[in-house]
Image (cartoon, rainbow, N blue to C red; front, side, top):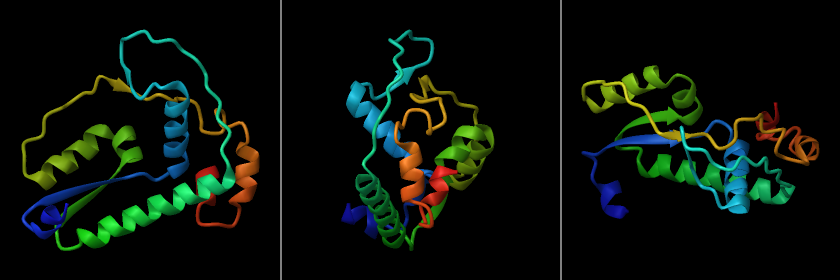
Length: 147
């Protein structure tokens, strides 16, 4: 990866998540169900999976993601860079794709995906100890994940 960091001619798109809890719940669910992606229009067994998250494991996960994000920002600080937030890309796809295409200096074309979200319910539903976690993270920088 060092050669990529040293090549300042590269344009970088840094995809970030606003809510790391959603990411963690999705990851835990995939490990439990062994279903890592779903396709639109393809019938798949629909099971609602609940997860129990250890507060300290959550804290470690949030801390690590923060650390990775900061390291990437530092390593790529001399690159031409565009930050894209996953939630914005998901909610305002066309607007974000136009921004990405403009950054890359390529013509914009509408695109679609065959993938669909695995978890559509609010994160409070599949997490069986959501209230405990909300209380545990009250007053921390991660409390915003539980609003």
